[in-house]
Figure 1 (cartoon, rainbow, N blue to C red):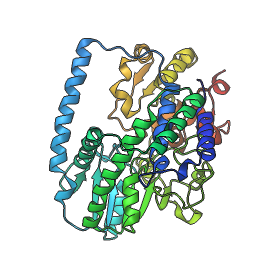
Figure 2 (tube, rainbow, N blue to C red):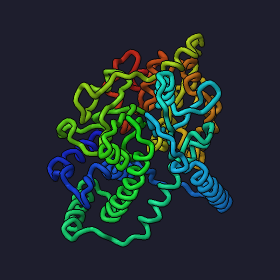
Figure 3 (cartoon, one colour):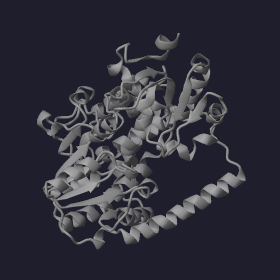
Length: 441
């Protein structure tokens, strides 16, 4: 299989429409809403995975296992110390942070909810913040006013694994039929029944937890970044008549299924937020959100606006070029760069990995080859990317949020012609955003 993101998205939307998957309930759970993004992720991963797996020597394997063990210990300690049920205070607003942490004024913050939090504090609201990704959350300053979801998620996961199958025969037949269709259409092999069984039970246990948390905290509204893995929370909020707001946290497009619901009646989904805070009006035109227009708010990217002001006095370095890598396309972007690097010999090149790529990218043969190039250096994972963008003339990539942000920093954005570039097609103007071959050939 060698499809583009657009082709995969279009095919999956056709399938969910013809199969009426949004009407499908298991144990009174609208299961397709829960697993939609997971199925999409499985298909994308299978389609774009590297053909050659990274081989690790025995010392690297031992080091990785030890690191995972230490992180687990720290995570369990965090689960106890920052248990959300140790907090009995009422709050007007609950904020569920994203796992992304970026440096702002010397400290790591969640760039999507931080400024909303500050605004609400100024208005006199009482707020409780929740984190849920220990690997990244540990970077930020911790205190007992910030709670962590490690413990309830851990308990839910253990209970789910201990349970036997409880899916009806009718649902089992439909699951097998759907799995066959997905496997044939997308040429992938996976256990859909196992995935659905796990997600149904996780949903039920998380719903139990969030219902009790919301009754204890009694908030007026909930703010989150990325609704996909919070369907049980949204369901609990709806039952308790609490408004849920989702803040844009990345590129959204009709070429990506996550926020695109072209055949869904507005306001009809059970586990979609009540309002969406968009970075600008243009994003509303790039995909079909399942909300009425009055519930799509032009909110702005406040982190980006602050960073632009902070670095507004920096001068561009005309010979500096940065390549933006991204998860899922690590090897493909690296290969494309290696093939075209002779055209960039006159530039000082910075290579920027996604935060998650730092965990594995330097085991990749292509990344190792790039690291040995004389005119290339890798951006440190702790460097402020926005300072780098403010000083950089050219930004090269495929289809990431950073490329959109680069336009705001008056960079010229150059695109590799590989799958994923279709996300950037609406922004191509052949002046500030153009294809690589048009620029350098």
